Length: 120
Length: 208
Image (cartoon, rainbow over all chains, first blue to last red; front, side):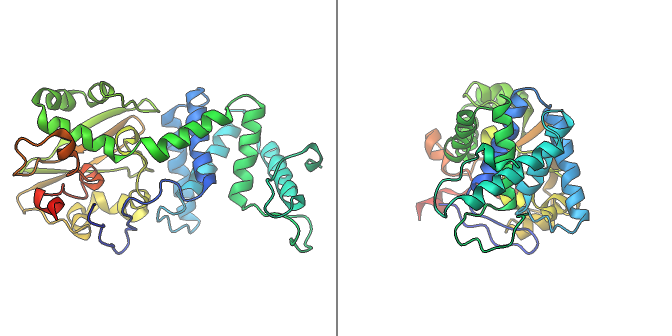
């Protein structure tokens, strides 16, 4: 096996840690690749927007240690989806609130599904 | 946020990120932009198939096969495509060779551009601000933090990745590996040695 990387002050280390820490990170990653493949944006557009999101988060006090990386990724995804006319911010918020409603009415442990009634 | 504050005893909870990701996915599926099965396939590939072993086999092949090495250094995109590794985002891959006189290290100062098709997804530290800023300003210090000390005469060259161009470090083949198979050689190649923040293992290190 690999020698474990020595912990470095300031630079968070991992050996060969998990690729995604939570399922939402994986879903967000895959959506960006799929939208790129559909031609919704170019990869340079993606990278420069992600770079801006990272700078913005840093300016707002994000420690930017790599742990919050997929939060920046998700912000980038929402921004480009809105910018490219796929779904505006109002629509994104409406669906987000509907999912929140669906979670509220779903007994703990049961799969959460979105229904028409979740949209107020 | 929730519009009521009674207890959630009987309901479920989704984090803010989960809510936003589900919202996006629902919209994108409804509008026909993405197919949920295709998303699952992408995730599965990165979790199980695409990782630094791909890169290790490429390095091992370059060590064992001079013609492949030449092709890799000339046009890495084309050379790795012959082995079935293609970038999902259409960037160019450049292989940079370590020699006794020059050590190469890769970084993406802007975000986290990384040669996914050969190394999988980047480690957390690669995406962190300290690495992104210090790799350029103080590469020798960063290497020291990773436990790597190079001779003073060795020049350290840092390559800043972009959306269009990504890099793969071709480390030096360790001594005492004459006649090894490519599979055996690949076992010596660590992920970090292909980023340039580590060295390959020696035959003695894997013998233990």
